Image 1 (tube, rainbow, N blue to C red):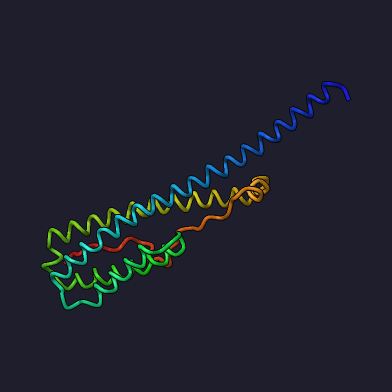
Image 2 (cartoon, helix red, strand yellow):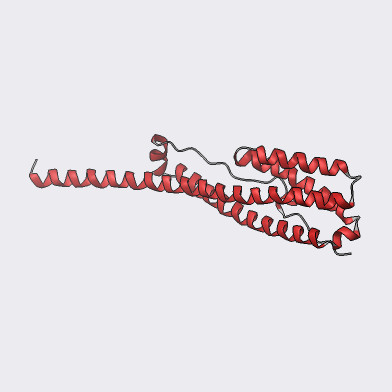
Amino acid sequence: MPWWGIIIIIVVVIALIAWVIGLYNRLVRLRVEVQQGWANIDVQLRRRYDLIPNLVETVKGYAEHERGVFQRVTEARTAAMDAKGPAASGEANNMLARALGGLFAVAENYPDLKASTNFLQLQTELANVEEMLAAARRYYNATVGQYNATQHTVPSNIVARFGDFSDAEFFEEEDEVVRSAPQVSFDS
C-alpha cells in the first residue's frame, strides 16, 4: 500500500473518531440542558410551595370552619414537595392544583377576603409563579423532546447505546383544567 493510502486511512479514522466524539458531546450537552430545565421547574415549584401556607393562613382567618379544604391543600402541598422526578411531580402537582381550586372556591364566599390586600397580593404572586412555571415547563419539555429524539435518531442512537444515556421524562399535567394556572379572579 502506498504511503498516501495509509495517510487517507488515518485521516478517515481520525474524522470518524472526531464525528463520534461530536455526537457524544451533543448528547451530553442535551442531557445537561434537560437537568437545567428540571432545576428551573423545581425553583418555580418551591416558590409555589412557599406561597401556599401564607395563602391558607389568609383564607383561614376568614373561613375557619373550612378545615377540610385547608387539610387537603396542606396534604397536597406535602405530597408535591416529596415527589421525586417529573412524572411523580406532575401527578402530585395535579392534586395540588385541584386542592388550590377548592381553596379559591371557598374564598369566593367571603367578600371581605376577596378585598383583602394580603389575599390580593398572594393571588398576584401565585399567578406570576404559575406563569413562570408554565414557561419553565415548556422549556423543559422542549429540551426533553430534543434530547430523546436525538438519542433515537441515526446515527446518534448508536453512540447513545454505548454511552450512559436514557430517555428523560416529560413533565406533564393531567387535563386541560389542571394545565391552566389557577384562576385568581374574584370579580363580584
